[in-house]
Length: 162
Image (cartoon, rainbow, N blue to C red; front, top):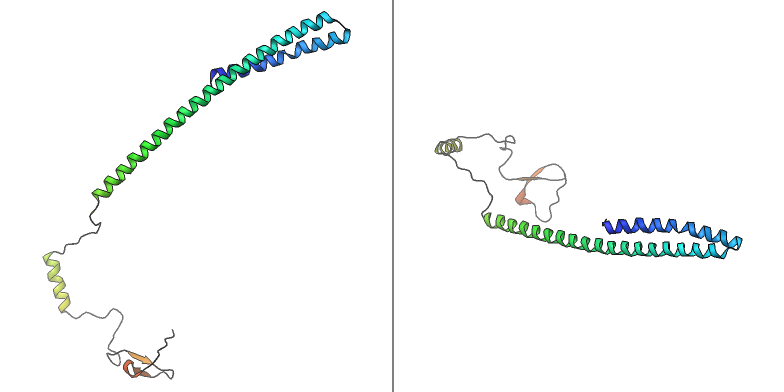
């Protein structure tokens, strides 16, 4: 809060509170019918009212300055945010340009590994899911009766139920 705003608000509040005293004196003088005291009380009241208005004007001026400073701060923060976003965008573009190659891993097999692979391919390996030597090398389909039939013998639709 700006110093003028604080001073204006505090002064206006104090002057307004001090304004209550001459009004009380005015009311008492009116009740008694004392015109001279009533006039003096109204002079004091008008002085305090003028001071209150002066302090209010000072508070208004301070609030305008506060608003102006706040707009300037907001403008600077906005410029900083825009500048930061531009820098971040430039960094992203640099990273994107530098990483145009694929990110795949490469694997090199040594000569010993190649030889070992050839030796394994020539040796007979066991089947991972058991013996597949079954009734025939061709796939077989089962009928509703439970008998096997070669796949080539069945025509039309085939429905599979698990």
